[in-house]
Amino acid sequence: MWTNFTEFLTIFVNVMIDRIVLSPYYLVLAIRNMLYDKGILASRKADVPTICVGNVTVGGTGKTPHVELILRMLGETEEWSGSHLAVLSRGYKRESSGFQQVTDRGSAAMFGDEPFQIKKKNPGVTVAVDKDRLEGCRFLASPGELGKSRTGRKCWNRDFPASDLIVLDDAFQYRKLAADLNVVLVDFNRPVFEDSLLPFGRLRDLPGRIFKADALIVTKCVQGMTQEEKAGFLKRLHYTDFDPVTSTALNRRGVRQHVFFTYIKYEAPKNVYVTSNPRYFYAKKIVLFTGIANNIPFRNYLSDSYKILKLFNFEDHHKFSDRDIRKITDIIRENPTAAVVTTEKDAQRILDYVGMPENLTDRMFYIPISSEFVTGEEKEKFRELLSGLRRS
Image (cartoon, rainbow, N blue to C red):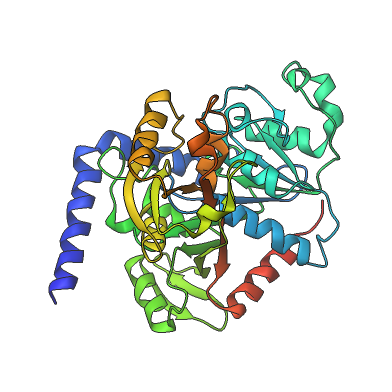
């Protein structure tokens, strides 16, 4: 009873904040979405099929590992195996501008940490960055258009095949582009209807926008999650009549929607630097630094195996400074047998730092992660959605 009352109070307070304190922001979002939903503002489709992986919050839902999951699954389908796949991202906080093809010879600073990571892990996939998603899709679908456009001619590397399908990383709020399949992610640990709009919460869009998705994925779940637990969580998102056989549920607008659940799979540690000494993998004490939206699951996972001597918690997409490195170095001097651990995304950016001390490069490693469906049945249902996309 107390839990239900607490949840009710949380939701009530958040609604009051959104509707009263943040009413101008709320109204702007509501009017903008209404104009697109009614067709008053136009949305256009790309020349090739597109899959949008997005959310309604500011980071922390696991977009990058889900983009990588979708790429793996597309390669396993009869329809898309052997096709030219592409990923298009904005490239948040990158130093380059306009449309650029991401190459593994670049850097996180040049292209953004997430696109750079995706390219390094998927060398056969064309990865590009462009703030203008319509323009980016046009160039990816027809590379010859690059030479015909003033912005296209600024692309450093124009050598890539025409894309058959494009995965859009974080484009759910880019309403000018109408994706063929919209996949929206919600963090299991932070239900969107129990959150508030920025700056009081982490919502950057109205929580009801999740009902516009073709597929909802609840991320960061417990691996052995039961059907009852799934149905219980969906109720907090205003879904009813959860059907685990079809992986669907009824949203509060009366529309039956695909719903899936995934968990984080942590993999074996890897060197950040080629000179790193693998013996530090077996250290029992670590210094942990992260620059991601939510490091709690990662920190909890590591605390099961290591004693965390010190945690440095930087903001998302943080650019590491001399001061940051000195802080880490000071802890290592006091604990010479400890290792230094970071996330896979942070590992892309730390490589941009010039002059890393040797006593850090030889003991620094990261933990790769991937997203996996809680059940094989859910994975098969999601694969059917991917296979249902048709070539243009």
